[in-house]
Amino acid sequence: MSDNLIWHCDGSGSYSVKSDYRLLREDVSTTIGRNSNNHACMVKRFYSELWSMSFPAKVLDAQGVQLPAPSTGEDWLVSTFCSLNEMHRRALLVTFWATWYARNKLVHEDSDPSPHITLAFVEAFLRETMAIKPVVYLTATADRVCWQAPMESMVKVNFDATFDVQSKSSTSGVLCRNDEGLIMLAYTLHHVHVSDAFMAEALSCLQAVILARDLGFSKIVVEGDSLTVIKKLCSVAADTSTIIPVIYDIRVVA
Image 1: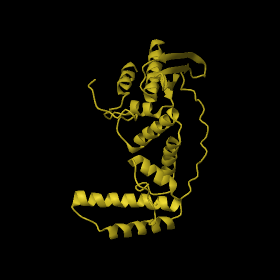
Image 2: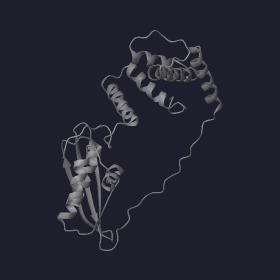
Image 3: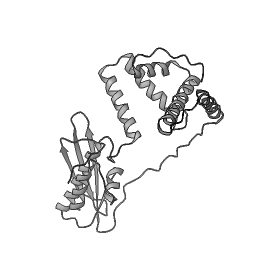
Image 4: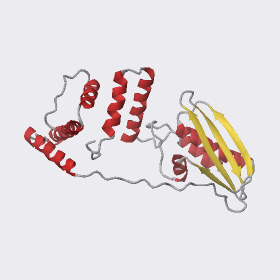
């Protein structure tokens, strides 16, 4: 297959803010693991409290905020944010957002909004968000999903995988049962040089269809808990993810 540029931190192969945030949190956790000092803990607290604030997603708090003299960009932002109360945090974030919007208007539209207009926008937006009551979402308890037997004369092949980040290795688990629930095969296989958990699940699925073919099962149902792998197997759209070569092999074998 031809080489393509991909974003390897997400199973889709495409960049997203969500995957970047997840990568950032992993970097913070790694830093804390190497050096458990007060600054690392404050950085983790900063990101946790920033994203837990009840705010529209596009802003992610008013006047009267006393900002300390900056050192480095991240240190200044982290120390400032963590030292403020809830009201001033909201004012700081809205001010950043409004300033960025004014900057974009100047750069892209050659429009120079007055600082008074920006300040009035910040004040109005804060009043509006303070007046809105947060919505409470209730999470329904999902029904427990149990294994279901396949149709008569068919075999269900279940696959799963474990992944070890440190050693970059994984273990595939495959279980074959007939329409009566009787175990036809139970198999595990160790893999090395595995890039991530997505690849581990894809390799496990590949191992499942290879075993089913080698055992002569002509009618099989493949079942796993990796939604990423299942979606890619069912999709006909072009894909640029790291696991697409394995998905291609699965389709060839199946």
